[in-house]
Length: 135
Ligand SMILES: [Zn+2]
Ligand SMILES: [Zn+2]
Image (tube, rainbow, N blue to C red; front, side, top):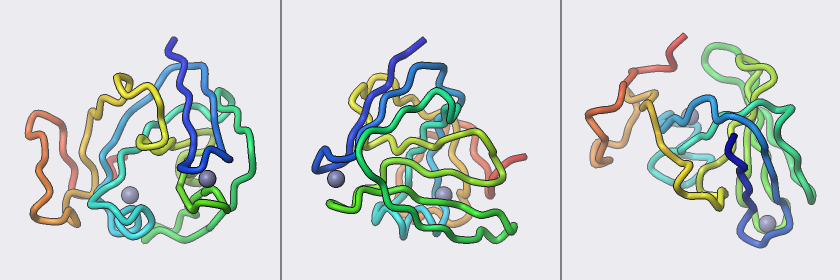
């Protein structure tokens, strides 16, 4: 099982996770674009029980189009997102790939919300692609 570690920009909020990475998704949804300030978010899904946080995180809740509550957890000092959760996927944390130290573990398997991808974003055509979120 991989050991995944990560931290925010200032280092105040950190996490450690022991367990399997369930899926790594490049999410091109409008919410991820705005929340990250980037063209898309790379989300590393692991079981919440496997993830241990140190430091403090703030939380921002918002509703998705499908009515689920998504929470973005971020460092209150530097503003970096470190992970998020979604009531559609109870028991899972979506770690933010950019926060993770073990870069070799970040192997996206899927592109989601391609319908809202920024047109100039290069995409690996070998990956499965979905207009919205599958399932
Ligand atoms: Zn920070
Ligand atoms: Zn998204």
